[in-house]
Image (tube, rainbow, N blue to C red):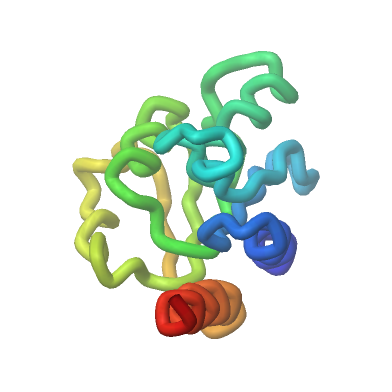
Length: 142
């Protein structure tokens, strides 16, 4: 999860919503990613989506059954759906997304996917809090 937090700070530096993700398979990180929705002008360019694409390219296949996704914020419904289709073995997230806090219900994830939340929650929330505090200050300054 610490590596996902590092990715979140890269997103923060790029003025993206700071969410980071890594995919681990066989004890090795095979993909690293962060939100790139503003950079790519693509609403689907969430950290998880970027990580799944990179992991599939690295592994040579579309299924990630023996892999774990570590992501700093609970996946949104789109990313949970993508996790379903990758058949990823495990999803570990840091902070709970208050807007979508019910998404870890089993129907959104593959039946065999293990889901764990709250891992390094405060560390995962820190870049998000900083990002939105900056945005609020910018709004006040206008």
